[in-house]
Image 1 (cartoon, rainbow, N blue to C red):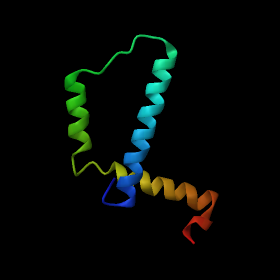
Image 2: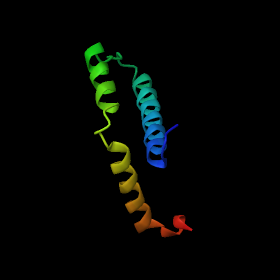
Image 3: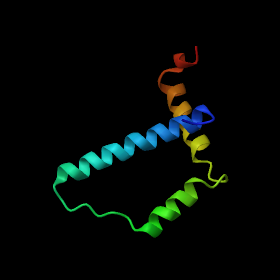
Image 4: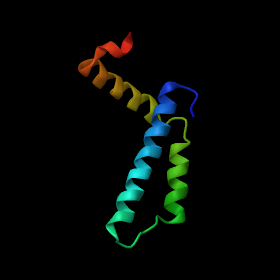
Length: 75
């Protein structure tokens, strides 16, 4: 799922978020507008760019929130 805890967290977060969005869109009864092939390709390109450090940045943000709300997770 990922080579680090940060990678695994971001992957699972993105999967969960995509599922929530899909359910919300389907429940709306509205026409589903799919992104273009170019938009999908660009999203994949950016997501696979090693300099795109979203996983580490998001993981550090989550840890800061946990440190504030319940630091006992460290034990």
